Image (cartoon, rainbow, N blue to C red; front, side, top):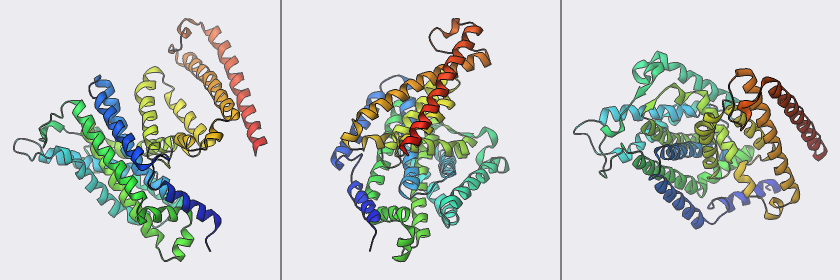
Length: 412
């Protein structure tokens, strides 16, 4: 007889299979349509806003592929950027081959080349790595990512060496007669492909395959007893995730018109892991929230402070400790639980702690590097005043951490 826990998980997955954030499927589709409309409005805004929106769409698509692998199948990969990066390189070479006068007008379906490259990566690389699960799978994918990154200097004809390779997307004709030299048109195309990936993810959640990969995550021993080969199910999930990551890699190459070693690096694999966990690995909008957060940190906060990576890591730690289901998981909690006074008090405490932490970190950076921070009025402070602020804010931060640790001990 199935255990009570497995029945609860099965019922939960059946209820969530055709939903988006707990909303009915039709409302979820309307929400996606509204997002596409917002992307269209942004397309007529400034060039910087268009670039940010396009980057968010690419990262969202990439995060959705990782969500399928990690959130639903439970496979923690440290080399997911391999599928993303190799597809980007394949797309770049396809553009070079197909571009020029007399070429086919197939620009709108170029991400299919990335999907094909990602599928081939899933077939060739996915079979050996999915023979194992858990820590072994994570370590193998980590080694695989470093192995592929090392090939850049070994095969410069394909990878372009340390400088990477470039493309010009306008060399491929458009079937719709659009000028993709305009960033606005590229944004609309990228949004359409991202929503297509969302549709694939939502459709897979309702299929027997979608339920099988969740079952492998929840209870692999019982699935083996029922006659399924868990390694084959993991391989199939890896294959689909690799294909979707290939689409994201293709859109990245077309957006930035350059592909370098960073596309397959551990840094890219870590980014997709962090943004999926921060946004929420159980919702299709979780990777979107993570993509927005990562884009803002990389493109906006990085211009404001050199400590943006510190804040990025701080937010990740807090989310893992206090919201294991990510930011979107907070909205999935019962209304009564979300509106309790303790939750509001905790949020206020975290806000106050964040302010103290920013003051401490920015003051420390200003004293160490000699560069004035962007905090109002901090540029006019003298070193003795900065040291006094550093000591006071550091003491308050340390006291807050001690109180937080004690409160967690009491709760446990």
